[in-house]
Image 1 (cartoon, one colour):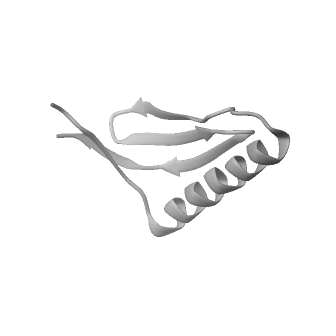
Image 2 (tube, helix red, strand yellow):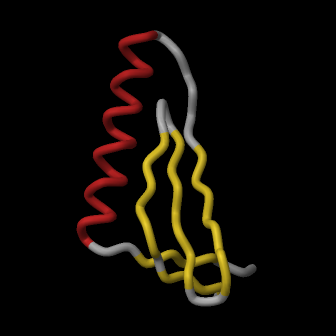
Image 3 (tube, one colour):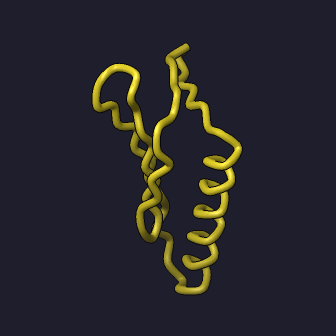
Length: 68
C-alpha cells in the first residue's frame, strides 16, 4: 500500500487544526454534517499548495509531499 505524506510547518499545522475545530463547532451549533475536503495542488514540480475546505476555504500555502 502506498501513502501520501504531506509535511506541514508548525504554523500550517496549527492553522489546519484551528480550522477543523472551528468547522466542527460550527457544524454542531448549526446541526449539520458538512465534512471537509483537502486539495493538494501542484502548479509545477516543486511548487505545491494545500487547500482545506470546511465552511470556507483555508489556503495553507506551499507544502512538501511525497509518495511512500
